[in-house]
Length: 411
Ligand code: HGY
Ligand code: MN
Ligand code: MN
Picture 1: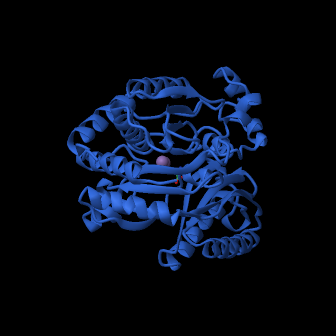
Picture 2: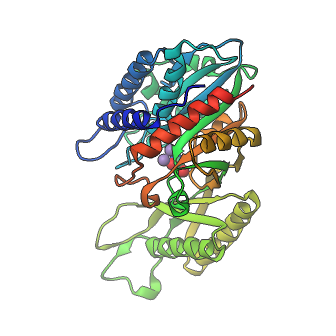
């Protein structure tokens, strides 16, 4: 078994990451939405890298680019991540896993090696859910669990998923064909920047994910009464934004009280007909609730909703609360975890085990096959932010560890 040269792998990964990061909808920040021209350009570039690595390249009905390296037998190891981004994103969240996958598969393709299984590298286009009010669409299609109702959801411009897909040159009728057969998909492995501070704090470049935290999204809409900011006495107001502000503080307080077991975030708050001299009558907000324990998350949601109803009553506000996402905690396969741990040791690391607070395509792929994730150290734990960073050295170690994992895996 040749020991992979992690230094050159890291340098190549860094150049590829920075080249891909130049493909954005905006000149001064990284924005790459699902089924946009930027998605197409990024998919074309990734497809080019896959071909250069010696992989056979195709794209499925949702634009997922697939680099196939033949192996012996029907079983395939799936390696992937996403190439879509949040708005004003870091350049590593997603692309790191695709690029390390290409480098690892290319290592074997170049040597003309034949392993007892094949390797497919997958570049998903809709992990972040930043265009439509749904997420993980492309990996769910690959896993055979795409819900056609998603096709009727609309983006901010009012275009439906179905219309946008047709504009991208794909047909919804072909989505079922994107699914792998269960007896073909041996496992799914994703390399991803940690997006948190644990590995840096522990002084380790790589870690093994034990589970991906479950998520609940609650859309809260508060209905008060719009009014004149100058004439309505304070005691007679039904101020929906004041109610929303109390709701945001409630989510934060309840989460803090769980002492780390649950995290809650309000990242979207919409005021209808917002104006400086109008008392807000209608405000909507999205509460993102996550935990490594499903029981703790469900309990949190119940308590939160009870308290929101109480504050709305106290403020004479109407309130509707709709769960728009409810994804269970996804355990990572212990055998795959063990294989990743041994591979990390082979490149000189001490495999730290940790839960992923961030969601990943592995949540969808777990419906198809066993999944596992390798985390790469993230400077300051900063992510979903252009300051996101991991070093070429750490990326090289991740690629070398993945190569060793593939070399020693049995399915
Ligand atoms: O929300 C998440 O955790 C992921 O970055 N989409
Ligand atoms: Mn992300
Ligand atoms: Mn990600």
